Length: 309
Picture (cartoon, rainbow, N blue to C red):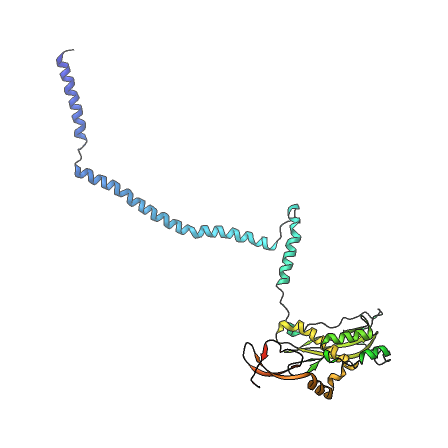
């Protein structure tokens, strides 16, 4: 190959290369920077617009989505509350338990009855066809015959001075257990009893009820017992005190400890066995006079005071 054609080929190649450069304009540094910044900034604006639009779309669709989620749950909960699920082998054993729990919850929700409104303890209504006697109405055997000599002697036996107690206000009394011992000596254990003859009446400060003393299968005395209370929680205890008070009054009709109501016996007993002393309350330091037996010590919370000495 000669040198001339090679030169022509090189010249043609240069022309081709120069022609491609002339068709594509050269970019300056300013133009390149402007173009680059424009290209970079434009997508940012588009992205911001798109993000704002997306956020607004999300905020607009959120209530709709929440509503869609809430609506099915509400519609599904209503049948569950009204219609019980079908009984199967698995839930058959749990069904009685659920019923018991609901019944116990209903029972616990019932209001508590106030004892101050009464105990609602009327005597039971007995069947007339049965041969049992209704002592809440019957006066069977009252004064039909006298007691035996042994029973009368036990009832009218004088009270020992050691059995008599003195209250701080100066009233003498026989403890309730002593009345029961006298009745046991007269009629024997199980030969007597107290039968209620009405409902327990509860007032603002007092509990009262009528009882009948039955001995040897006949009514021998009727009396109404009473007892004070200071708090509604003490009403049950007051009912027992009311029963003991009725027993004491019934025994008075039979001559038991009748000397405790004799004014002369009371004055003589207080002179021989009682004394009045000045005492001081341990906590409040309050002074007052109380009665005690000569052979007894001053009870707590009182202590002897030299105030009246």
